[in-house]
Length: 253
Image 1 (tube, rainbow, N blue to C red):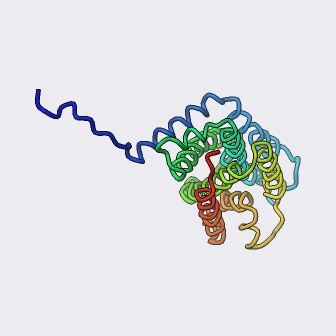
Image 2: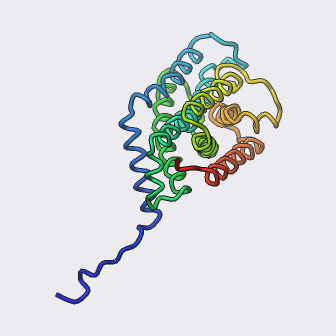
Image 3: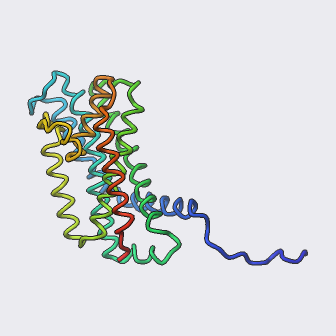
């Protein structure tokens, strides 16, 4: 037996390994809360079938599914990346889960990346299911526009996730729940999901990310067009501002 065979080599694992482990744990915990995932998809699915198949609202087009399905996909992104994540993270901090993670090698940016990555995986699954439901009832998107649609969706996920983690860090869990729900309802009301959104011009895309995301998905999936530069800029700004604010102000307890 050669010398040094059992020489210990203590040290922290590479950050990518740490983040990967945390990402896996986030997905595992989400799988154990299956009822929450189903509930998060319940409202978008009802909106898709109700507003997409029946004339319950007035739309600016005869293609009801073409208008409603992209809006529902945007709504699902916000529901999971913002509302669900804000509430879950707020209670994790209240129960001391984040405090224990703070004592681990996981850094604050690492936790934010793991949570955002976990949410992105969830959204891929949810969007795929809703898209299949939409396709089954007659929705026919432009397949060649999937890449820009995916791009704006990733930016929307990053922005919502950053804002959710920031709220969960600075507010009490009960207050976080109320604030996240209120913002969700307001965005749903003026986001143009089941009906045409009010025209606020370019400034509206920066104030209403749900409306901007829904409009971008319609431009690509419904018309096969390109995403307006103002929407790219607004969603990028939301992603950078809120993720940066969350990384700087995130508290473990």
